[in-house]
Structures are given as C-alpha cells and as structure tokens.
Length: 538
Image (cartoon, rainbow, N blue to C red; front, top):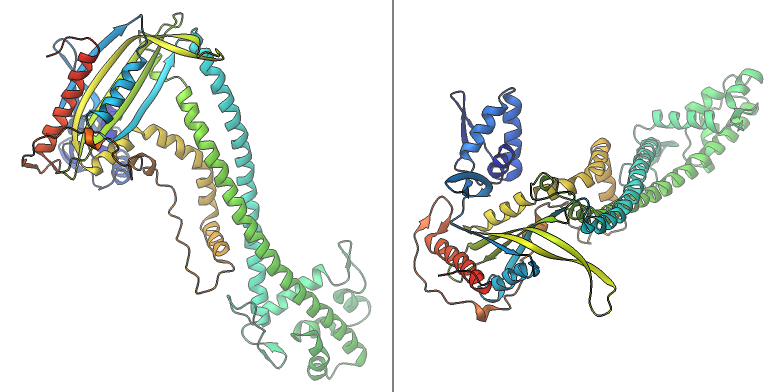
C-alpha cells in the first residue's frame, strides 16, 4: 500500500497533510500534485532509514477505501473513500460477456444523463499458450519496430542539435568581435559604422587587432594551410620589412577606399616600398573583413532557421512516437495479472480490466456527481472469423465478469486530480519519451530557447503582434479536456429529481444534495443492471 498511499496523498485524497514520525510532526506542503510530490521526496531524503515509518504514517492519512474482500474480511484498496459501493459477479460460459460493458456505457448516457464518460483503465493479460496472446504479440511487434526506428532517428537528430547550437555560439562569438571592430551595437548590424579619423567609434582597437591576427594567420599568404613568402610575418623576417607588422596592426581604415589616405597620414615616416606593401595588405584585409562579416550574418540567419526547423522536426517525431507507445502499453500484458491464480499459461484464458468514470453537473450544482465503474473480466477468448465476408478474425469472450460501482461527489479539481492519479503510469511513459530532449535542453542551457524565440521573431515588424509564448506540454490537459465543450445530446432523457437544499460539506467542498444524487444514480445503475441481466433484484 506504500505506493498507493503516496499517490493518494500526492493528488489530494487524504485526511490531512501532517504526519507524525518518532514523535515529531511533519507537514506535507503544496497546493498542487507536483508540489506535494516534491515535498514527499524531500521528506524521504531528510529521513534516511525511516522508509517504513514514513509509509505507515502516509497510509494513516491517505483516504483509502475499505472493502469487504471476503466474508468478515476488510482490506484497503487503492481508491479514495466512496459514498456507496456495490459489487456483483456475472458468469456466463455460453454467451459473450462483452455486451455487459456496452450496456453499462449506454445506460449511463441515455438513461441517467451522464454526458461525460472518461475511460481510465484498459488493460489485459493473456495466457502464454492462448491464441489471443499470439495475435496480440504480432501487433505488438509491429508497433515496437516502428518506435525503434523513430527513436533511432530522434537520437541522431538530438546529437546533431548539439552541433548546430555549438556553431551558433561560435558565430555569435565571432560576430561580437566584428561588432566592436565596426563600432556596431547589438541589434544595429545593418547600420553603417560611425568613423572618426579612419577608426570605428567605440572600444574597437582590440577587436580590430584580433581580426587582423585571424586574417594574418589564416588568410594572408596561406596556400594549402601553409604560409608562403607573401605573409607579413615572413616578409618581416626574410625581406627585412621590419616595421610592416607594427604598422599593419596599428592603422585601422574601415573602408578599402580610405586606405591610401589613412596610410599617408599615419605612416608618413615610412618609405614608399613599405607604404605600398602596407596599402596592399590593408586593402586585402578590409575586403576580407567586410565580406566575411556579411557572410557570417547570412550564415547565422541560415543556421538559425535550420535550428528552428530541426527542433520542430524532433517534436514532430516525438508526436508520432507517443501514440505508438500508448498502443504498445495497451497491447502489452499487464505484469500484475501474470501472478493471478485464475490465469494459467496452458489454459485458453485471459484477464481484462476496464474502468470508466461517468460524471455530470446537475442544474442546481457547480460540482460533479460521479459514478466510477470497474469491470474485471476472466474469460476464454475464442478467435473466430466474424462478418459475412469472413476475413476479419477476432476474439469473442465468454466467462466471468466482476462489476464494481462506486459513487463520489467531487469538485472539478478533485476530478482532475483523480484522472491524473489513475493515469500516472501513462504520464511517466510520455515523460520518458521527452526525457532525451529535456536532457539535451538542460545541457544546452537557455541558448536553444533564446535562438528559437529569435527565429520566431525574425522578419516581423515591431507593429506585428508578438506570438504567444509556448506553454509547453501540460501533462494533465488530455485527461481533463475530454468533456470540454460536449453538448448533452440526451438532456431530455435525464430523470427529474426533486430539488432540495443540502448542507455544505466544508471538508470536501460539495453539498449533501449532490452526495445523495450520486448515491441514488449509482444504486439505480446497479439495480437496473441486475434486472436487465436476469438477476435477483429488489
């Protein structure tokens, strides 16, 4: 029960938020499941070696339901305490028991007026030697192969993502040197440099010297990766141009057409031969600097667009993978069923569990009246060809079905938390898909986010509306949005119940009238189910 108690407390189904361990009281703070999960994690880390005491204390405050599993034997379940609970077992080895589920589903909607029905659980496990196990295994293998291909592609693209960001960082580093050398400020790259006496305005001397050093090392007189005799440093050593490097690194004309004027003014003491070589080198450098600057800007824009495209292609692949992962989970056998004594590997049998939550908001209420229906099948699947054409082969289930009804009166927040709690395993599965991308984002820091924002805003005028910031993936949204905007097509079939003012339950936040309505609906469904299936009823 330790794991179930943690989950109930985390999602707010508890009788309090304080536990006592070794005479000391600890408070589990947080108004959301995420915050309470972090609080529980910190509590366990702060009390090493007290795992058993913590589990016992959490079990004491968790709002576990008590159910009679056998005569005079009560046991805790992993469900919150309900208002009312009913349980029956229907056995039929001659006709299909699948119709019972659809009868329950339709009666909720058509007769009782529960317009929103959420499927919470849909798992199965088949005996290893059954034909159903083999048919499911074939479909499972196809889905697994497809996911393996997609994950391999995503892994390669995430690896490439590091290289793209690294290249953008290198480009930004080099552009910062160009900006200072030209006298530009960030964000004004297209403006012409402000000149004063042939020099860029601002702290550009060091940046200009840095660029000249790069040009002298990588471009000037370099052929095939090696320097030739026309390099300024080799000319200083071999041709006795002693002052050439000093003049080259001291004079900074911004445009090729200004070279003659600036050299004549600032190197008037040098002889004509040195001036001519210096002018040639400065013209070559100025042309290289301006062209490479424009090339660097174009390269950055292209790389930025490529990063944005690359990132969204990764997200596209992940969106393709997630449905396959969910299908794989549903096609995979539930490991908890394998130890069930009813499931024997040599027998043609399987176990299925289906769970749905039917909910409605009565006219005079703001909260939900809920009925939780759990169906557990122990059946013998018979693989038969169905339909007139006889080309589709599927299972027909005959055997035993166990049905449990539970009634609740919940607020919208409690419904949201319950759906998220029951879907916790699916949520962990989806989070594992994004874990590689999330880890890459953590390693790359905020650079990716900044580059993506810049790419999204590129080409937009200041008057254009700023695009809404990406809110990321809300892991609870798919489970609470199912009933949003659904029209009640069967409103005329909802029975009219007498209205009466009920006392407000301060703890749960719902009225007594809503509890009575939920309890009555639960009993009505249970009672009519028995009558419809030929059972003793009253």
